[in-house]
Image 1: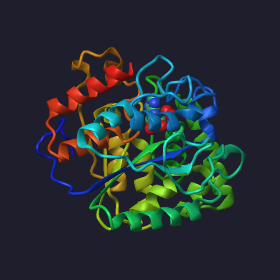
Image 2 (image 1 turned 60 degrees about the vertical axis):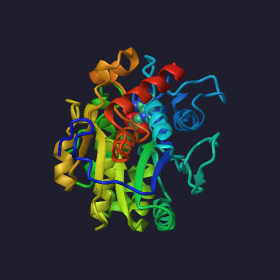
Image 3 (image 1 turned 90 degrees about the vertical axis):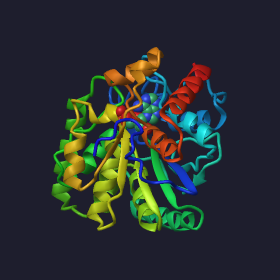
Length: 338
Ligand code: AAM
């Protein structure tokens, strides 16, 4: 389903929503050329921590690094921050497996950062993470009627590609960069597919364990445990979550993302969503018309989505904030950050 920004397709009015971004690392973000979700291959490992700090505090003081793209395009966490402020929500951050300690409070699942799937199982404890996610989902059910799950996993579109391909979907995933590093991603996914075939691994959680990232099993567990409405807030990475959920015979929830992911000619988001059985909702915030050069770059395919930004805008609309209020808050937040 296509939703022009904040049209009358907003059918849900949550009473007590929880916005829960899952933070994790994959060693793939250190591979030069794979990710633009941070300034450089060695510093991008900090992006989830810095994005969370920015959302909570409105600025980053813990390190002299910004989680922006190498060309300085502002992180999508600025959008998420703006929506949390507008909706008066405190995000519930989940540490599924970070290499370094976060600087703001997170719900720690005591996971480890995901490894490089080419050199061994990427998430050896995927089963345990799934069960912890399930426990967390059941606990959140007592507090909330709508769970919006976001993600911040630099390099995560590559792990999503590996998982989707291994599950049999002819996916082409999106990227944080304008020029998607396809051949690099394809090489990794091909190598993984061969290995998984040799090892005879076809079960969804075995696939995640071999070639996913820590966010995926946690999101699937939460989806299983939560009794209310669940929204997956993200692009192709959330399609990987939905595909694993389907493989596990769980419900396949709504996926909300930005129009910039849907319009990415290097990916096939809509086709894969349909193959999984997901009816996506696309948010078009018309960043080309806000008068901010960094945000305007989203329209040419830089950044596109992240930290649940599309879902956060959707949630703000579901909570009765108008398009102009939403855009004004984003501009205000991003100007304060810039
Ligand atoms: C998260 N923080 C970001 C960002 N994301 N800061 C700047 N740009 C982004 N795109 P890739 O696989 O290319 O690294 O893209 C996935 C990452 O991009 C995720 O961390 C997602 O949340 C987003």
